[in-house]
Image (cartoon, rainbow, N blue to C red; front, side):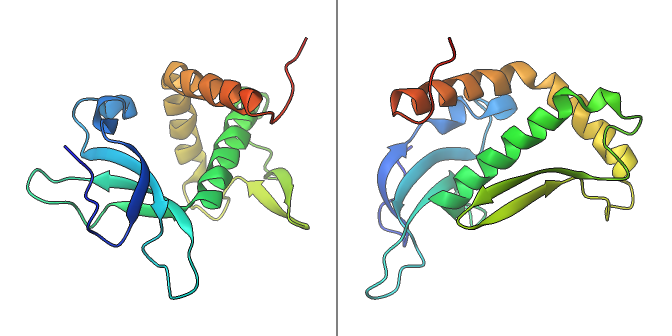
Length: 164
């Protein structure tokens, strides 16, 4: 199925078979494609690029398709990595996080920093964090494959250096 090119998001680079590799939903996913292109929110004289997940209901392209600026997707990748890094050692804490200091890390970007922390405002965080940890462990192989691929691509592009 081809990603539409007549809608507001204008695809430039696409993956049109994403439903075949969409994690646990592979071959059964409504996410049919991914694209990088011109953002749908562009105004005259102001053009941004974005990434979009294209969902198809079986009858029409879904309004649940998501479009994000590319920097936010990279920020999400940073969040995923920091979260995964935290859970590698979380067993040290009885509740899988430091209750006295739930901040996992601060990641400096553009003169400030993103604070990555456990959401202690969640009234059932103790239950949810255990469930999250179990699912993260269950999906470790699938995540590791993608993270290794991303790491290798970043190295090929000159971002980082190989460990010797």
